[in-house]
Image (cartoon, rainbow over all chains, first blue to last red; front, side, top):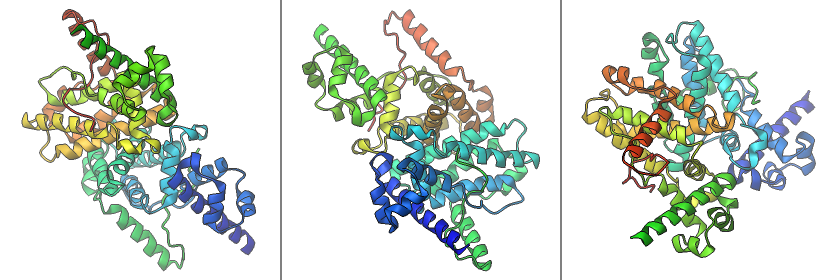
Length: 233
Length: 233
């Protein structure tokens, strides 16, 4: 049991090192040697967990879906907002998310890994919208699959443009503006009026999760972002 | 005069060849030799117009802003929609637009050209929104600069995701869905109800422009997309 825990920790350490390398150099220029150096483990340990650089990249993409999601709310549309705002808050701070975006969007080398984390994010958004619909939160014309596709695409575009034009300094503000623009055509008015969509929302939820964890005695510093059970592929 | 016309045609020929090369290989792997071969001109002709590969790329990015825009409408928001729908219609068919997107979004080699065509598109969207505001078409809370930033980012994200997941087969349908989702929080109800936002809108406008040109005796087959006067930088 202790041994298995240690193996999981080493695996996570390697993934974090790999994420920082992919984030900095891109897939093509990343080397396993650099991952070994940053993780502070042996080359053998890396190859015990991952057969190749491609495998490491896939691991980084899947890791963002391996943890618990944002806290449950009465309103599923609030969870829909919170998910996007938390990722906007964490992405500039978390190489796993940042590398995941870079790996998912590379137009050249990474085509063999398909569209990276995009299909997983669409499925996660769709699940939240379907649940919102069951609770009567959606306007009647909303098709969860289409709106989930669109929301994922628009979020991605905002992330890229914020990175290009401001080095992600305005990411939270721009993602909040995205929700303010999109939600009036998605949410019924009563729900819309009650949603919290400010640009500080991501930090709020992250703090809430951290406080809940501290109260539960969990020592993990990093709040989890995304619900388990949604694979990256 | 004839000589100058011929030079302009050669320049355009070279830019189209360069666009198809950048579109296929990306900036890093593109070579001037391949551009020379595709344009069917001499290497000297290419260097007469463009000093370097970087210059060629900049030329491709600027060319998309060098032509007339979509036809004027009573509603400036209809022009706002038409612009995005026409680009969605032409991008899979026009290497200049497609290469422009690839060059603007490259995360690696092309960083020295900044954010490519993105700032030019934001300015163009903002100008249309400001004009729409002057005509009373915008809801009172709309800030043209912010909504232009968001629209450009969201359009870009839709383009990338459509390319990744369907090879751009659903681009027009997805961009139409983007407008349907965003416009209710931008347009006053009277204008909103009159807007034409179907996924066939781009093809409609392109046909309209082609018919107007044919009537005017202009032999250019390709309809222009974007208003002059808006530089890529």
